[in-house]
Length: 467
Image (cartoon, rainbow, N blue to C red; front, side):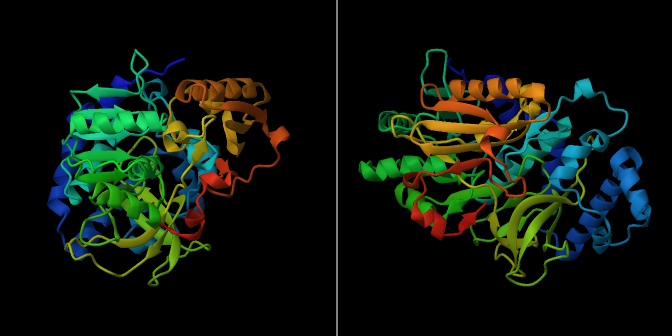
């Protein structure tokens, strides 16, 4: 079965979100505040944070009950450090209390849930407001502009499956100024075709997962393919990027790498600029913290902490002091660019997830496959893990919320792999009892690669440079 290109989803993400009022409001806010001094930015964050806490207390049952239990009243919130008195929200709390975390008096049918959390092996059910999508588009474009990229420039997009009605592995979108190439067909025959298509289309930006860009760069270097002159920027996201990979990509494409940090819960956003390798934590997006294992603030140069975020939008399902499970290193350094944003080093997020197909090819089975899904069958999954021990074979161990839900979950995973990776893998879906205990406390457990050829030793030795 062939999976067709999804023009409606692409249109919404890249075009229609730009007509939402939240898109223009967010860009205007960034424009007013980008060069503020630290004191003004802190005051801005204080105002937005207090407004978020008051809204949650008045309109969201979970927070009203929790704040009252802790003796907290947001009306008394007087300085940014007061946020440390407020309780954390972790992923398990979010799963267990999602119904009471939704704002009162909303019509659920108008706000269908988004199922996410594939990268941890334990799905989350989330609700988002329409304004959140426009806001997200604005911050994405701002992060690209920080790197000198025109968000309206022609680009080649290699992230996930692309088939047209004739079964081709590419698709041109005149309206979106984009050439879509399937990252699920990455053998040498298709890579040769992709290089020729890119030269013909002449995009300015290559937009891909790091694990996908590395496969393309490796092919071009191995086959001594001449550089693609039109590409001026490589934009990588959703996975850690290792230094040996960055060196190879920059060597092959002869241009800088850009990236961003974010997650499906939309609580924290990080961006980079050409002036340094540090992460700019955008204060207009949300209030971000780094905490240690005991939940205390990390404020020592070079100290590593867990990323905690309080989002400033999405009034439907606000997340306050949300523990992301990602980590970064604290620094007092400032960027030469002149922006007075908080700075972090070495964000560590999702691991790369590369599987070996029956033919020996490498494909990413990462975030684009299972990170953000709207299929209600995915809601039957409580926890899962994908494991590869042999070429072309994958085992998916699944724990469902209900015993009768396993069949739906099994059909869901079989359908996903049949559509997105036709004839590439033999997939076996087993119940958790047949697969052994899954450790929900370990992040990135959703995919385990046991084949040495797929995990270079350098990836194990080096820390990621980006998240």
